[in-house]
Length: 376
Image 1 (cartoon, rainbow, N blue to C red):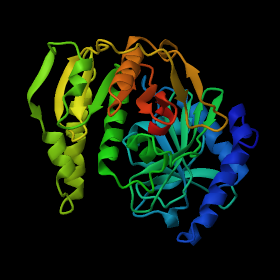
Image 2 (cartoon, helix red, strand yellow):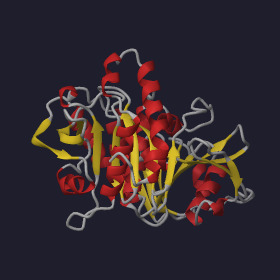
Image 3 (tube, one colour):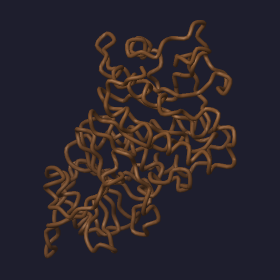
Protein backbone atom coordinates (compact mmCIF):
# COMPACT_ATOMS: atom_id res chain seq x y z
CA UNK A 1 0.00 0.00 0.00
CA UNK A 2 3.01 2.32 0.10
CA UNK A 3 2.76 3.02 -3.63
CA UNK A 4 -0.91 3.76 -4.44
CA UNK A 5 -2.13 2.74 -7.88
CA UNK A 6 -4.99 5.27 -7.76
CA UNK A 7 -3.27 8.50 -8.78
CA UNK A 8 -5.79 10.79 -7.06
CA UNK A 9 -4.88 9.24 -3.70
CA UNK A 10 -1.34 10.53 -3.92
CA UNK A 11 -2.16 13.92 -5.45
CA UNK A 12 -4.72 14.81 -2.78
CA UNK A 13 -3.33 13.21 0.39
CA UNK A 14 -1.10 16.06 1.56
CA UNK A 15 -3.88 18.64 1.22
CA UNK A 16 -6.30 16.47 3.20
CA UNK A 17 -3.76 15.88 5.96
CA UNK A 18 -3.20 19.63 6.17
CA UNK A 19 -6.96 20.29 6.36
CA UNK A 20 -7.53 17.89 9.26
CA UNK A 21 -4.42 19.08 11.11
CA UNK A 22 -5.39 22.76 10.83
CA UNK A 23 -8.99 22.28 11.89
CA UNK A 24 -8.14 19.95 14.75
CA UNK A 25 -5.54 22.39 16.03
CA UNK A 26 -8.11 25.18 16.00
CA UNK A 27 -10.59 23.09 18.01
CA UNK A 28 -9.33 23.73 21.53
CA UNK A 29 -12.30 21.80 22.90
CA UNK A 30 -10.94 18.61 21.35
CA UNK A 31 -7.27 18.49 22.36
CA UNK A 32 -7.14 14.67 22.16
CA UNK A 33 -8.20 14.47 18.53
CA UNK A 34 -4.59 14.94 17.41
CA UNK A 35 -3.78 11.41 18.58
CA UNK A 36 -5.80 9.94 15.71
CA UNK A 37 -4.99 12.32 12.86
CA UNK A 38 -3.73 10.48 9.75
CA UNK A 39 -0.43 11.10 8.03
CA UNK A 40 0.06 11.30 4.27
CA UNK A 41 0.86 7.61 3.85
CA UNK A 42 -2.25 6.63 5.78
CA UNK A 43 -4.54 8.85 3.70
CA UNK A 44 -3.01 7.50 0.49
CA UNK A 45 -3.55 3.91 1.62
CA UNK A 46 -7.13 4.50 2.78
CA UNK A 47 -8.18 6.23 -0.44
CA UNK A 48 -6.41 3.69 -2.63
CA UNK A 49 -8.00 0.69 -0.87
CA UNK A 50 -11.45 2.32 -0.86
CA UNK A 51 -11.26 3.21 -4.56
CA UNK A 52 -10.42 -0.31 -5.67
CA UNK A 53 -12.96 -1.73 -3.23
CA UNK A 54 -15.62 0.44 -4.91
CA UNK A 55 -14.99 -1.45 -8.15
CA UNK A 56 -15.52 -4.84 -6.51
CA UNK A 57 -18.79 -6.79 -6.70
CA UNK A 58 -20.09 -8.98 -3.91
CA UNK A 59 -22.95 -11.14 -5.20
CA UNK A 60 -23.65 -8.45 -7.80
CA UNK A 61 -23.82 -5.54 -5.34
CA UNK A 62 -21.57 -2.48 -5.32
CA UNK A 63 -19.88 -2.08 -1.90
CA UNK A 64 -21.10 0.83 0.24
CA UNK A 65 -18.80 1.23 3.21
CA UNK A 66 -17.48 3.87 5.58
CA UNK A 67 -13.92 3.78 6.88
CA UNK A 68 -12.97 5.66 10.06
CA UNK A 69 -9.32 6.10 11.02
CA UNK A 70 -9.66 5.48 14.72
CA UNK A 71 -7.98 3.29 17.36
CA UNK A 72 -10.29 0.82 19.14
CA UNK A 73 -9.67 2.54 22.50
CA UNK A 74 -11.24 5.75 21.15
CA UNK A 75 -14.41 3.99 19.99
CA UNK A 76 -17.58 3.72 22.10
CA UNK A 77 -18.89 0.15 22.48
CA UNK A 78 -17.16 -1.11 19.32
CA UNK A 79 -17.70 -4.49 17.71
CA UNK A 80 -14.21 -5.99 17.76
CA UNK A 81 -12.95 -8.67 15.39
CA UNK A 82 -10.93 -11.43 17.05
CA UNK A 83 -8.48 -11.17 14.16
CA UNK A 84 -8.11 -7.82 12.42
CA UNK A 85 -8.56 -7.84 8.64
CA UNK A 86 -6.09 -6.47 6.09
CA UNK A 87 -6.98 -3.15 4.52
CA UNK A 88 -7.38 -4.63 1.05
CA UNK A 89 -10.04 -4.04 -1.62
CA UNK A 90 -11.12 -7.68 -1.61
CA UNK A 91 -11.46 -7.84 2.18
CA UNK A 92 -13.46 -4.62 2.21
CA UNK A 93 -15.72 -5.88 -0.55
CA UNK A 94 -16.50 -9.09 1.31
CA UNK A 95 -17.34 -7.25 4.52
CA UNK A 96 -19.44 -4.56 2.82
CA UNK A 97 -22.87 -6.31 3.06
CA UNK A 98 -22.62 -6.33 6.86
CA UNK A 99 -21.85 -2.62 7.21
CA UNK A 100 -23.73 -0.88 4.41
CA UNK A 101 -26.38 0.63 6.70
CA UNK A 102 -25.89 4.34 7.49
CA UNK A 103 -24.00 5.14 10.69
CA UNK A 104 -21.80 2.02 10.76
CA UNK A 105 -18.07 2.67 10.28
CA UNK A 106 -15.26 0.19 9.78
CA UNK A 107 -12.52 1.11 12.23
CA UNK A 108 -9.01 1.22 10.74
CA UNK A 109 -5.77 1.57 12.70
CA UNK A 110 -2.14 0.46 12.54
CA UNK A 111 -1.12 -2.72 14.34
CA UNK A 112 2.08 -3.20 16.33
CA UNK A 113 4.02 -3.61 13.09
CA UNK A 114 2.61 -0.40 11.66
CA UNK A 115 0.32 -2.17 9.18
CA UNK A 116 -3.14 -0.69 8.57
CA UNK A 117 -5.88 -3.15 9.50
CA UNK A 118 -9.64 -3.18 9.96
CA UNK A 119 -10.23 -3.95 13.63
CA UNK A 120 -14.05 -3.94 13.72
CA UNK A 121 -16.99 -1.54 13.59
CA UNK A 122 -18.16 1.49 15.54
CA UNK A 123 -21.14 3.83 15.42
CA UNK A 124 -19.67 6.64 17.53
CA UNK A 125 -16.70 8.63 16.26
CA UNK A 126 -15.17 11.87 17.56
CA UNK A 127 -15.08 15.23 15.84
CA UNK A 128 -12.39 15.53 13.13
CA UNK A 129 -12.01 11.76 12.88
CA UNK A 130 -11.01 11.06 9.26
CA UNK A 131 -13.96 9.29 7.59
CA UNK A 132 -13.94 7.95 4.04
CA UNK A 133 -17.19 6.72 2.48
CA UNK A 134 -17.60 4.56 -0.61
CA UNK A 135 -20.86 5.57 -2.30
CA UNK A 136 -20.52 3.92 -5.70
CA UNK A 137 -18.02 2.76 -8.32
CA UNK A 138 -15.15 5.25 -8.16
CA UNK A 139 -17.20 7.60 -5.97
CA UNK A 140 -15.67 8.43 -2.56
CA UNK A 141 -16.29 11.18 -0.01
CA UNK A 142 -13.92 12.35 2.73
CA UNK A 143 -15.78 13.87 5.68
CA UNK A 144 -15.79 14.38 9.44
CA UNK A 145 -18.37 14.82 12.14
CA UNK A 146 -19.01 18.46 13.06
CA UNK A 147 -19.60 17.77 16.78
CA UNK A 148 -19.21 14.73 18.99
CA UNK A 149 -22.91 14.67 19.86
CA UNK A 150 -24.16 15.51 16.38
CA UNK A 151 -25.26 13.31 13.49
CA UNK A 152 -24.10 15.96 11.01
CA UNK A 153 -21.01 15.52 8.89
CA UNK A 154 -19.04 18.05 6.89
CA UNK A 155 -17.89 16.91 3.46
CA UNK A 156 -14.27 17.79 2.76
CA UNK A 157 -13.54 16.27 -0.65
CA UNK A 158 -15.30 14.18 -3.29
CA UNK A 159 -13.47 11.69 -5.52
CA UNK A 160 -15.23 10.70 -8.74
CA UNK A 161 -12.95 8.68 -10.95
CA UNK A 162 -9.97 10.86 -11.84
CA UNK A 163 -11.71 14.06 -10.69
CA UNK A 164 -11.22 15.36 -7.15
CA UNK A 165 -13.34 18.20 -5.79
CA UNK A 166 -12.16 19.85 -2.57
CA UNK A 167 -15.04 21.76 -1.04
CA UNK A 168 -14.77 25.45 -0.25
CA UNK A 169 -16.71 27.29 2.47
CA UNK A 170 -15.97 30.80 1.25
CA UNK A 171 -18.79 33.33 1.08
CA UNK A 172 -20.85 31.38 3.63
CA UNK A 173 -22.34 34.59 5.02
CA UNK A 174 -23.70 35.85 1.71
CA UNK A 175 -26.97 37.49 2.64
CA UNK A 176 -28.78 36.37 -0.50
CA UNK A 177 -27.87 32.69 -0.24
CA UNK A 178 -30.87 30.44 0.50
CA UNK A 179 -31.00 29.24 4.12
CA UNK A 180 -30.62 25.65 2.91
CA UNK A 181 -27.31 26.49 1.25
CA UNK A 182 -25.99 28.33 4.29
CA UNK A 183 -26.83 25.28 6.40
CA UNK A 184 -25.02 22.97 3.98
CA UNK A 185 -21.93 25.17 3.93
CA UNK A 186 -21.72 25.54 7.71
CA UNK A 187 -23.51 22.53 9.30
CA UNK A 188 -21.82 23.07 12.66
CA UNK A 189 -23.37 26.49 13.11
CA UNK A 190 -26.76 25.90 11.51
CA UNK A 191 -29.65 26.02 13.92
CA UNK A 192 -32.56 26.38 11.48
CA UNK A 193 -34.45 23.10 11.66
CA UNK A 194 -36.51 24.11 8.63
CA UNK A 195 -33.35 24.30 6.52
CA UNK A 196 -32.29 20.90 7.85
CA UNK A 197 -35.59 19.39 6.70
CA UNK A 198 -35.05 20.81 3.21
CA UNK A 199 -31.64 19.17 3.18
CA UNK A 200 -33.22 15.83 4.13
CA UNK A 201 -35.75 16.27 1.33
CA UNK A 202 -32.92 16.96 -1.11
CA UNK A 203 -31.03 13.85 -0.03
CA UNK A 204 -34.18 11.75 -0.43
CA UNK A 205 -34.89 13.26 -3.85
CA UNK A 206 -31.41 12.24 -5.01
CA UNK A 207 -31.92 8.77 -3.56
CA UNK A 208 -34.94 7.86 -5.69
CA UNK A 209 -32.85 8.58 -8.82
CA UNK A 210 -35.82 9.55 -10.98
CA UNK A 211 -35.14 13.26 -11.02
CA UNK A 212 -37.60 15.81 -9.73
CA UNK A 213 -38.39 19.40 -8.85
CA UNK A 214 -39.49 20.80 -5.49
CA UNK A 215 -40.86 24.35 -5.36
CA UNK A 216 -40.77 26.01 -1.93
CA UNK A 217 -43.20 28.95 -1.80
CA UNK A 218 -44.12 31.40 1.00
CA UNK A 219 -46.81 30.06 3.32
CA UNK A 220 -50.17 31.69 2.74
CA UNK A 221 -49.09 33.35 -0.52
CA UNK A 222 -50.99 32.94 -3.78
CA UNK A 223 -48.73 34.73 -6.28
CA UNK A 224 -46.87 31.53 -7.12
CA UNK A 225 -50.02 30.15 -8.74
CA UNK A 226 -49.48 32.61 -11.63
CA UNK A 227 -46.46 30.50 -12.57
CA UNK A 228 -48.40 27.22 -12.60
CA UNK A 229 -50.52 25.77 -15.40
CA UNK A 230 -54.12 25.31 -14.29
CA UNK A 231 -55.71 22.99 -13.43
CA UNK A 232 -53.06 21.25 -11.34
CA UNK A 233 -52.94 17.53 -12.09
CA UNK A 234 -52.59 16.49 -8.45
CA UNK A 235 -53.74 19.37 -6.28
CA UNK A 236 -53.74 18.61 -2.55
CA UNK A 237 -56.80 19.95 -0.71
CA UNK A 238 -56.65 20.41 2.18
CA UNK A 239 -52.90 20.87 2.35
CA UNK A 240 -50.98 17.87 3.70
CA UNK A 241 -49.57 19.03 7.04
CA UNK A 242 -47.88 15.99 8.62
CA UNK A 243 -44.42 17.20 7.66
CA UNK A 244 -45.17 20.65 9.12
CA UNK A 245 -46.47 19.10 12.33
CA UNK A 246 -43.35 16.96 12.78
CA UNK A 247 -41.06 19.96 12.17
CA UNK A 248 -42.88 21.92 14.87
CA UNK A 249 -43.23 19.01 17.26
CA UNK A 250 -40.98 18.93 20.32
CA UNK A 251 -39.30 15.52 20.17
CA UNK A 252 -36.89 15.97 23.08
CA UNK A 253 -38.62 13.22 25.07
CA UNK A 254 -37.94 10.64 22.36
CA UNK A 255 -35.56 12.16 19.76
CA UNK A 256 -34.88 8.81 18.03
CA UNK A 257 -38.55 8.14 17.43
CA UNK A 258 -39.07 11.72 16.26
CA UNK A 259 -36.13 11.42 13.87
CA UNK A 260 -37.48 8.18 12.40
CA UNK A 261 -41.01 9.57 12.03
CA UNK A 262 -39.69 12.65 10.25
CA UNK A 263 -37.60 10.45 7.98
CA UNK A 264 -40.61 8.43 6.86
CA UNK A 265 -42.64 11.53 6.01
CA UNK A 266 -39.68 13.20 4.29
CA UNK A 267 -39.28 10.14 2.06
CA UNK A 268 -43.00 10.16 1.26
CA UNK A 269 -42.94 13.83 0.24
CA UNK A 270 -39.70 13.40 -1.73
CA UNK A 271 -41.32 10.48 -3.53
CA UNK A 272 -43.96 12.84 -4.93
CA UNK A 273 -41.20 14.64 -6.87
CA UNK A 274 -40.67 11.49 -8.94
CA UNK A 275 -44.02 12.18 -10.65
CA UNK A 276 -43.70 14.13 -13.90
CA UNK A 277 -43.92 17.83 -13.04
CA UNK A 278 -43.02 19.72 -9.88
CA UNK A 279 -44.08 19.27 -6.27
CA UNK A 280 -45.09 22.43 -4.38
CA UNK A 281 -44.68 22.89 -0.63
CA UNK A 282 -44.89 26.00 1.49
CA UNK A 283 -41.96 27.23 3.56
CA UNK A 284 -44.12 26.11 6.46
CA UNK A 285 -43.85 22.54 5.06
CA UNK A 286 -47.42 22.09 3.86
CA UNK A 287 -47.70 20.01 0.69
CA UNK A 288 -49.90 21.92 -1.78
CA UNK A 289 -49.70 19.79 -4.92
CA UNK A 290 -47.54 17.67 -7.18
CA UNK A 291 -47.25 16.91 -10.87
CA UNK A 292 -47.62 20.66 -11.53
CA UNK A 293 -46.44 22.28 -14.75
CA UNK A 294 -44.50 25.55 -14.60
CA UNK A 295 -45.39 28.39 -16.97
CA UNK A 296 -44.17 31.94 -17.61
CA UNK A 297 -46.80 34.48 -16.49
CA UNK A 298 -48.10 36.89 -19.11
CA UNK A 299 -45.88 39.88 -19.55
CA UNK A 300 -42.89 38.37 -17.77
CA UNK A 301 -39.57 38.08 -19.67
CA UNK A 302 -38.15 34.69 -20.45
CA UNK A 303 -35.13 33.76 -18.36
CA UNK A 304 -32.09 33.97 -20.63
CA UNK A 305 -29.13 33.88 -18.24
CA UNK A 306 -28.38 32.47 -14.82
CA UNK A 307 -25.32 32.52 -12.60
CA UNK A 308 -24.08 29.01 -11.81
CA UNK A 309 -21.56 28.13 -9.12
CA UNK A 310 -20.34 25.15 -7.12
CA UNK A 311 -18.67 25.43 -3.67
CA UNK A 312 -15.37 23.81 -4.64
CA UNK A 313 -11.82 25.14 -4.54
CA UNK A 314 -10.79 26.65 -7.83
CA UNK A 315 -14.38 26.91 -9.00
CA UNK A 316 -15.57 30.19 -10.46
CA UNK A 317 -19.11 31.41 -10.99
CA UNK A 318 -20.21 31.60 -14.62
CA UNK A 319 -23.13 33.15 -16.45
CA UNK A 320 -24.82 30.62 -18.74
CA UNK A 321 -28.06 29.94 -20.53
CA UNK A 322 -30.44 27.77 -18.45
CA UNK A 323 -30.38 24.99 -21.05
CA UNK A 324 -26.67 24.55 -20.37
CA UNK A 325 -27.57 23.27 -16.90
CA UNK A 326 -29.87 20.52 -18.12
CA UNK A 327 -33.19 20.02 -19.87
CA UNK A 328 -36.62 21.54 -19.48
CA UNK A 329 -36.68 20.70 -15.75
CA UNK A 330 -33.79 23.10 -15.10
CA UNK A 331 -35.07 25.79 -17.48
CA UNK A 332 -38.55 25.81 -15.95
CA UNK A 333 -37.10 25.94 -12.42
CA UNK A 334 -34.94 28.92 -13.40
CA UNK A 335 -37.99 30.63 -14.89
CA UNK A 336 -39.97 30.02 -11.70
CA UNK A 337 -37.19 31.44 -9.52
CA UNK A 338 -36.99 34.54 -11.74
CA UNK A 339 -40.74 35.16 -11.64
CA UNK A 340 -41.31 34.19 -7.98
CA UNK A 341 -38.39 35.87 -6.26
CA UNK A 342 -39.46 34.93 -2.75
CA UNK A 343 -39.54 31.22 -3.67
CA UNK A 344 -36.84 28.59 -4.18
CA UNK A 345 -36.71 25.72 -6.69
CA UNK A 346 -34.78 22.52 -5.94
CA UNK A 347 -33.94 20.26 -8.88
CA UNK A 348 -32.59 16.71 -8.70
CA UNK A 349 -31.22 15.14 -11.88
CA UNK A 350 -31.33 11.43 -12.60
CA UNK A 351 -27.53 11.37 -12.66
CA UNK A 352 -27.32 12.67 -9.07
CA UNK A 353 -26.71 16.36 -9.74
CA UNK A 354 -28.65 18.72 -7.49
CA UNK A 355 -29.26 22.42 -8.04
CA UNK A 356 -30.85 25.13 -5.89
CA UNK A 357 -32.39 27.93 -7.98
CA UNK A 358 -32.99 31.22 -6.16
CA UNK A 359 -33.18 34.88 -7.11
CA UNK A 360 -30.03 36.79 -6.17
CA UNK A 361 -30.60 40.51 -5.50
CA UNK A 362 -26.83 41.00 -5.41
CA UNK A 363 -26.38 39.63 -8.93
CA UNK A 364 -29.71 40.76 -10.32
CA UNK A 365 -30.51 37.35 -11.77
CA UNK A 366 -31.25 33.78 -10.82
CA UNK A 367 -28.38 31.96 -9.11
CA UNK A 368 -28.10 28.22 -9.72
CA UNK A 369 -26.18 26.64 -6.83
CA UNK A 370 -24.77 23.19 -7.64
CA UNK A 371 -24.71 21.35 -4.28
CA UNK A 372 -24.58 17.61 -4.93
CA UNK A 373 -21.07 17.44 -3.45
CA UNK A 374 -22.51 18.73 -0.17
CA UNK A 375 -25.34 16.17 -0.09
CA UNK A 376 -23.30 12.98 -0.45
